[in-house]
Image (cartoon, rainbow, N blue to C red; front, side, top):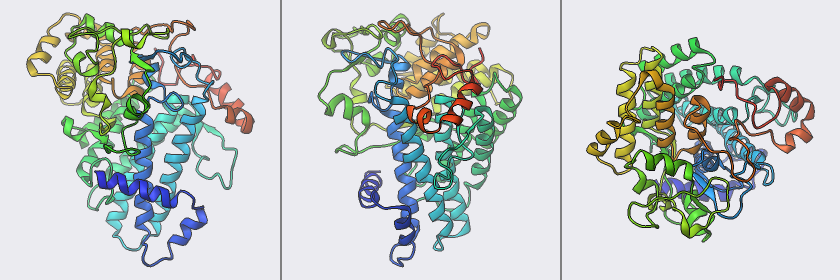
Length: 475
């Protein structure tokens, strides 16, 4: 994995100044087969996606704030949901389009022209690209709603793309994942694979697991498509263990480190403490993951979260746990625990997914506790509590709360879980008194440079506001 990451950054330095024509010229060098830039672009886009999803940087990704896992000590705009002072929507938008989706588009072009590989290998690598690209599109939709999609990948010919309907995009993404899964057999994957190191069988399960995520996201808005998609994904095969989860590892030396380490350790700053929202829930439930999620800087077994959105003294509140300060900590794209929670909801809704809601729910919680260093006995004791034990009569609150707690290090998914289930109850931001955003507003550049299409999109979704619900957030 270290070699993959180092290769990516070396190639990034060499190729970062190349134009599209420069890329094309690489194809005529017989000593540099086209698989090299395709491999680089795929690896670079995947790592950049993972960095964006893991980052706690207030200029890039504030999902750890929005999900109320962390809060701030000094700079309070972000936990009070002032997203535009640092142009966070623009930065998130730019990373996903420019550094992920466009690089993947170029990777496909190089791969199509590569005469050194078999058709089976080409199909397999195209499918790997598709999985990562679909992931990026899903994050864009789940952040903004309607976004440029059908006209987005031709900036040379169309600088003012229309915005596509978010529900229609989701349907196409589901189809693309099904097709990708069908091509993840028979060929060799990219040699510099930052997710699975070339294990194509795990890529196959990742494609199916991601399709399950999309299926369950639309369970309230399109139950028929949700059920058929979920059942098909499960029948093909989703993650069976924590070991199959989709994660991207990092190196111990800068600049190849986990972005959490960059902002919480390397920066030398004391800007973040655990939010009282997550700490209070875990204290009330005597959650065995507390000593991993959080540092015991206030004393053994003592956890005190900072008031969400308020000015909090760093030394008087609980800090992030040591595990999350490891520069090599992998970033989570999707894990087995998430899949088990999706299966719990699917079973509760009557989908044919091979088990009961309670079985999947218990497995999700147990797998999370074990992953974070707990024991089977601790998991059993936790599940035996009346406020944790599965309840079909109160399933949205039970699944939503426990799903949210388990997504502590996958905060964007934690935000989606809260929006989907309306559980648990999150705090109003202390200073602004604003509720949790349901979406990001569109970037300022879109409002200024793509005005007509921006206005049409804002009207179509019901207004470009933080409290405009996404199409799948219907409860």
